[in-house]
Length: 145
Image (cartoon, rainbow, N blue to C red; front, side, top):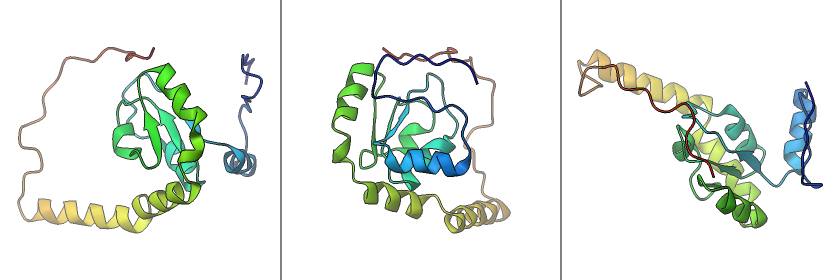
């Protein structure tokens, strides 16, 4: 969907692809580069990458610190540090990435977590220690250098 210029002759931009092509690309890749500059609420691409055995290289914003522990990827706001980590991508093992995703992002675990929260609410527990309030908006773009 448009023109993509990549300076690195090894990097490839595939554009919009269907699921079968996407999985072929992920299975043959060395990792997912995910340098968001905002507080990403949840990155489904991260989970897909981990299920495919690919480590994740991204920025430490939003949900990424919760989704990407050091065993399955590297987070930094420094492009130089991310580039260095990507050069050594083989230190993250595909089976470790896949096992982490299977164990932590499955429908059974999600359903049980919801049931636990519902039970706490039904028992009268207040989940938020302080009432919600309007907070000063964060900058649109977060640092990435």
